[in-house]
Length: 296
Image (cartoon, rainbow, N blue to C red; front, side):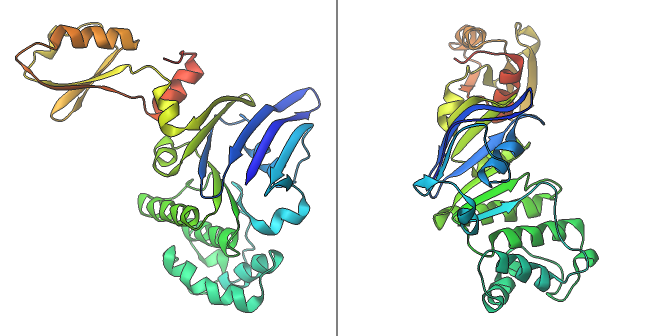
């Protein structure tokens, strides 16, 4: 559905995005991660035709992406942009009409969306009367009311409590099940892990990681060892950290080689009740990449 090929964006001497390539198919969710200033928002703005790439090609539905494609795209920016004096209904209808829906169609869909996202308020409630969390939900409704084929969400989980994070995750999964392609950015790796099919990591505008979650995690060393048993844990050495993970403990080593060496030492112990080498989490991988750790 969306293909980004060798895309670069420069602002004078600054290269915000450098030779970026990735693909996103219908019914896929891509988690875009990276530190502030890594190029995530610039990438979104190029997909949306807000910025023109310095080089490279962006294709959508088999043709070069252009302004006529915007009705098929839903975008929620990190900077929430709602009109405070409008009612919920007025706000949603306004954006829906910009994307080609009629007023009647928008009003017919609004009630279901308010129920789905548990918006606290009436359609006649003004935006300024809502909590920030409910304003964010209304922003999401304006993004999705026209059932876009491509959904772009910039830090959608920011400021949401766990209940509303779970509701948003379900909305993303539902959009995926209906064939939408979804790309979102987040600093919360747990959310990325839960909802993404693929992950793309940018560092200083360059692609550092890209692929399916399992593929990416398998490409890094397993530096954590879970052990369960009746041990005197003070006798263990060589690890960088140890933490409880009932009923056992997780030991973190500098390398997978050290983790395996520890495992070999205890593997035949009668006190050992269980063990496994743990694949790194996305949080672990993010820290490894920024710290310069090598793939396994």
